[in-house]
Length: 320
Image 1 (cartoon, helix red, strand yellow):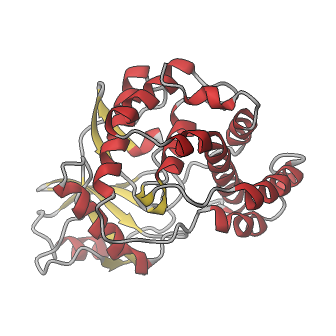
Image 2 (tube, helix red, strand yellow; image 1 turned 90 degrees about the vertical axis):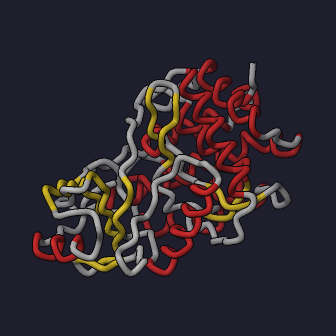
């Protein structure tokens, strides 16, 4: 989440009048994240999230996200509803951007999850995968392996972010072009299930949010993304074995990965680390100075990448 586009109060009031959610009480920008402009919207009828879609989210993809959330919600996944106006419309326009008003879910996002919370997150990921496997829609992964070289080129001077980064990225891109798997089970996945995209109360998951990178990809890749984001120290240099084992145990309660998927996990996690390293490096260089946004340091994902390409990386995915 972030704020790139500001909303005029009159435009906001006009938007809210289309809904049966009361009148505007307050609207405050949310600085965390980097993808869209997000606001905590309070009305006389409750609390909501107002999202204006920027940058990597294409307006034409929004009906896919609305349908996916509807599908998951009907299968008891804790996902936020896209609120519809009196005419049944979920996707609006405000301040020159496509926009949605979204259900506010209880819970907090974590910065240092416990093993018990990691296990709950893994189980929720598995539950979501079982539901998503029956979703009829699909979407190309715009941040998937086929697009990483383009992201690297668009970022510009990677060595200005981390000295020597360009050579590492070039080597990794060549490696994945030669070694990426082709025949693993795939369906729509979240592809960005970081701790800040999961809401929890204690060890109970109350919300899975921010599905704007959801796309058709390997389910094991989604596990790898979640492993990379939930189990490491803040600087990315150390994988916490207790958290990692708990995450994998939770997932295994819901879905048993195949032998081929398990064998591919270190490579997929290495690729996931490159993906987030590249997008963070791009945003580090290109985020406007006046944007209300918290830029994310790319270096911890370079450290994760180095961990995942170590000879013993398979041990990081053990359940015990």
